[in-house]
Length: 311
Ligand SMILES: [Fe+2]
Image 1 (tube, rainbow, N blue to C red):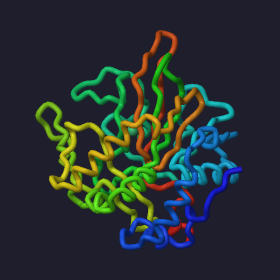
Image 2 (cartoon, protein in one colour):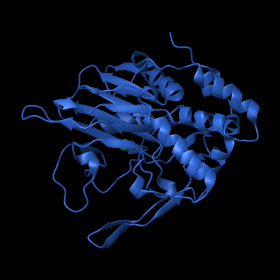
Image 3 (spheres, rainbow, N blue to C red):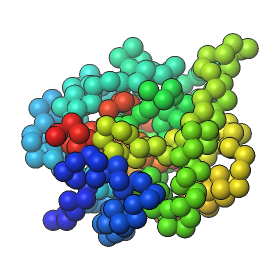
Image 4 (cartoon, rainbow, N blue to C red):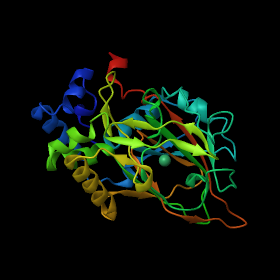
């Protein structure tokens, strides 16, 4: 039986906001200690079985919410996985309070992306290749009002080999940073902390440059959000000492293999996460087996993770 602490479900969203206020160490300490008590994460504790994705049972929703609140991620297993079909996915999300799908350059018409190796015109996007994907959160290049708060990624078919995801709850990284030097948190919350240069394809700007904080706290829910990419050449960091030190610290932390949870999704399994930090190892497809993931990205937080909504 999992022991979920009430600090993950504060009665008022102000309580949650206070956790991330650098002047309130008491609120932070309470939350931090409860959060650290959950480590190390046992991957088996993250798993939830779903009987029917079209009609979720109340207990299934609660099990998903609890794990996402505590660990930032849940691994679900569909009892009877639909064969190579993703039409169930938006309905599955809707029952979890997820309705606003992000449509990106490579998503399908229904805004759910089919991640698989494919030949691409113009810029090559690594998610659609078999190359490793370095640490990031999704949508760090999105406009401020279109930040990704929840990702659902469903495995229709794993690769013949490889394709392992590493996952790290960004709240745990926040704790490591703040414990070491609160000034680093201040630097990472600065509105000019991180700039993603414009996206240019064949000389045409298809997305303007984006500048914003790494960590931000959502006013409505009090939840912590993170924008991050380890891809050095694509990021311009604010030029000051605390930012440089903080970025260096993050790189060192993420290089530590032991810090992350590793999981290779099997067919019929999927991940729902609060857009926590993640990466993917390279993989190999074979003639008989090719990796296919369906990915939906939402602007909303999972139902139950927004105390303001429930008040
Ligand atoms: Fe991603």
